Image 1 (cartoon, rainbow, N blue to C red):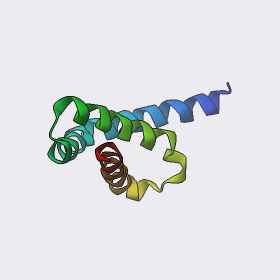
Image 2: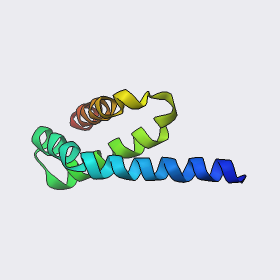
Image 3: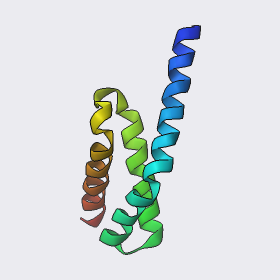
Image 4: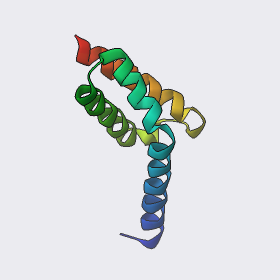
Length: 81
């Protein structure tokens, strides 16, 4: 991998780890409030971050937190069906 691609990949990982630090409690709280089960809430919260990470290139950075919360709620609804 070229040096430039490696720097971009590492900065994306750093950015994503900062997103997790900042929003993990809020995402978990949404999941737990809606599901009412700690284990299931943890699974859905993890899935939300994974889905965000896999699709980060298609989101604008100014709306990334609202996209994360939308993904979270959508995944909770799927889990509750």
